[in-house]
Length: 291
Ligand SMILES: Cc1cc2nc3c(=O)[nH]c(=O)nc-3n(C[C@H](O)[C@H](O)[C@H](O)COP(=O)(O)OP(=O)(O)OC[C@H]3O[C@@H](n4cnc5c(N)ncnc54)[C@H](O)[C@@H]3O)c2cc1C
Image (cartoon, rainbow, N blue to C red; front, top):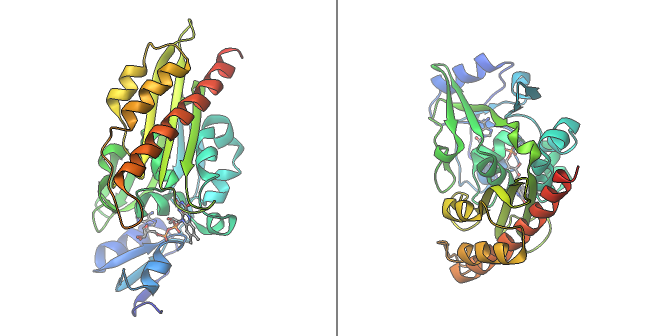
């Protein structure tokens, strides 16, 4: 199928882009086009104006600044995948990207496109939830920061207003000293996950769990951060029984069903993947502790 007719705009900088977004009704921004173009071709999305961000170079960057990692919305997934700065400061993003689509889709697909598309199973959305990303929105009215927890409003719907675009995200770098893991179950490599689980673990001087974060996606419209499970892990010994108990709680989380996957199956995957993620994150946390 072909998309419905639209007017194409080719802004050369951010100020032009936000002006176009503010002054045109039913406008969409185009990033890598890996999700938007198929949706337009299927006529799920029919914008009257398409604002192409591909020449807005201000939105493409990876910077380490004063204990934070800043990534621009138009940074290609492939650039994040090959960034040594990301590998050094936030290897979880590399682990997540290993599951995202194919190298062709990652060549074009952007960080911001994935976060704004908000597929419930998208790996970068899961990573942003785990890492507690701060989302930076910009419009002609100014800028505002949105904590990731408030960004996903509903199924594939973000907190961005119609005249706002995502300019980038900021991550704090305390995560550098934590063991990490990203595991998922998908029908084929490169497909969206049915359920994915990521984890961060740090250890105290005795080798018990000092801090734990978990994000599960594929259960609901946005990744779940199970605060009670994370809390219960703190202070626990680093052993199989600890991970098993956490995984058993993960199986009790609410999960939606669709025509292909029952909620019981998603809950089963939540248990299995939580166990695996904690086990892998624990092994990396031990390596960090032993230098
Ligand atoms: C074959 C195939 C397999 C894939 N597999 C996976 C997978 O396993 N996991 C996964 O996570 N993804 C997968 N994807 C999707 C891919 O990751 C896309 O890159 C991503 O979903 C959208 O990024 P994009 O840059 O292409 O954005 P686009 O498609 O250009 O835009 C997506 C949406 O976000 C909006 N948007 C984009 N940028 C901004 C911004 N800066 N501010 C506000 N709104 C914005 C657009 O208006 C649009 O609504 C796959 C895609 C394909 C084609």
